[in-house]
Amino acid sequence: MIVNWWTFHKLDKEKFWLGGKFVVHGVHTMWKRPLITKWSWWRTSAKPCEDSYSEIIKQYRSSKYINVTKLIETHLANGEGVKRCFNTWSDLFYVPKKFSDQWQRISTVFHKNRVFLEVSVPTIMSFIDLQSSWEFHLGLYLPDKYGWRRFHDGKLVWESYNYTIKFMHPVKYHTAVSKINVEKLKNDVIPYSKRFLKC
Image (tube, rainbow, N blue to C red; front, top):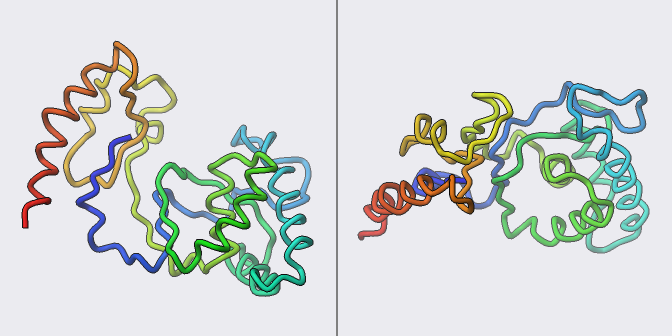
């Protein structure tokens, strides 16, 4: 991943940030079968997401840490009145301090149930705050532009990169064929970023 951090300066640090689009339709409706099949990860994440929802409601029903009634109301508002497991690109997101305690408690349950990241992040956010108040800092996901393929050699990465995109994913750095990515980061992106460090 390449993150052009200098594009983040206007984001509100009191709000959730999400780097993918949040959609309500075409996601998993809890306990509805058969599963939606256009996204393959529902086969492994739908039931764990449902289990996490049930566990959170049960575990925190009489808790001073989480207001379960508000949690359900917020989730239903985000799901247009329906209990849903959401999915979106979730490689880059931000949780403000005011939500960090709830996030930690809820995400622990999702992690324990092995819910896929791209389901966990937007679904947990949907419990805690109304999506109308989130900040969407959309980056470039290369599979959205080119389809699924290996991006290790950097050719499509650097054809698509510019300094104004928020971030780009995936960008690999750890193999011999990815050497160009390391060189471009070191010789182009990092020197450019340093201009924002001079006060």
